[in-house]
Image (tube, rainbow over all chains, first blue to last red; front, side, top):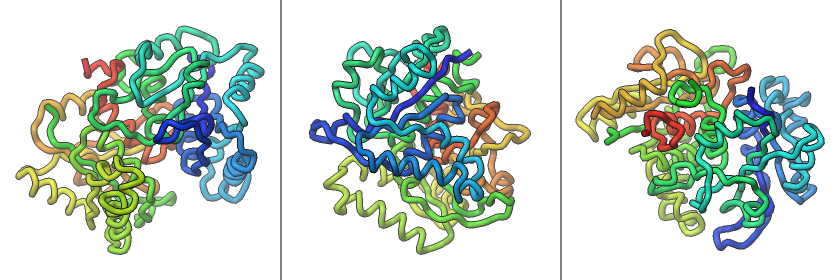
Length: 194
Length: 194
């Protein structure tokens, strides 16, 4: 039995390529792709985090369009994924939402494409998550990655995907899919799935 | 030593939701995301397959913009991924391209979200690919999946991702990333990677 797992896509606080803390814009396909991956891997929710109200309204409109709106007729399965999406103003609000739902604070896993000391491997994280009934929140960054203040409050930092590759610039949509697969996938190739 | 591996994203022949064979339109982010994933996992090339010349010109323009064009200054790493992209008019042309480069026909792995008889598991495919020096072509479909004529010429069909999930509607961008990770990833979670 997997505990309830959530993910969050953070648009603030993240860094730009110079390392400055910025707010990025919501990308339509991030909402769709990560919702579809989250639904396929059995996640309980997907928070789109942005402090900008007009951006949260865009997320709400995307969801409504496919959940009951015109898009629902054309692509009926999409609403089922987009119903997982919740737009919130901050990572704290996402944690509070999980805590209200489960009467327990989530264990927060931050992610990164850059090596950091003390990262937890996917294998360890998979085992930890499976053996614990506390809810889990996996935090993904946009732009050039999460700001330091997010790592400061996270309980764990997940190892980078393909950290030894000579090129490591996956889209956040691809990275989210790979992480969910490594943590919750049922492939025969995954030793822990057996 | 991995042999040379290529992927192809097919816009024709694919099926729509009624099962009819159609040609789909090129999606900008499919070009970017799958190129970035291909580059990260060490693939040798990424064919965007469409019989429509105007669509192939769009692909060429996306590549030029980031490989030497204006986008190269803003996102210098993107050109390195997009240089893998080659637009071709058919799957046969993609195979011929690989054969010209390597003086050997590629082993063709078709992919699908729907169960089929005789699928090869990711674990088996990973082992087969690693133990063979013939080039490999992994074929991904757009729309509602590859047409039967593609399966008829493929040497293998890869097992579906999360075939046992009650919802299985990953974006092709997410599916490509997960497949490359299962076949070529270096995660500790992958038994075969050890």
